[in-house]
Image (cartoon, rainbow, N blue to C red):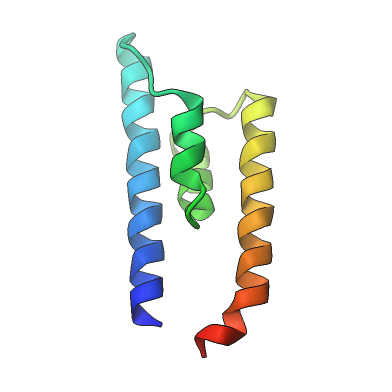
Length: 89
């Protein structure tokens, strides 16, 4: 159980940092990180990290399509957590 939670924490931290890096690149007018890459970073249980970055850094907040994919990944992760959580006990 501790390994799973540690993995989720690391995944969320890395996702947040990737979003922060993309935000910094945007501010500097540099080549950006592909949205697909940000979504792949969100996929392994890192939706909380993605949402935290979006809200705290005000990053990707005006792109409805990006929000939609992130919301879909969040719902998918919620369903996986709901159906697998008892197996971790």
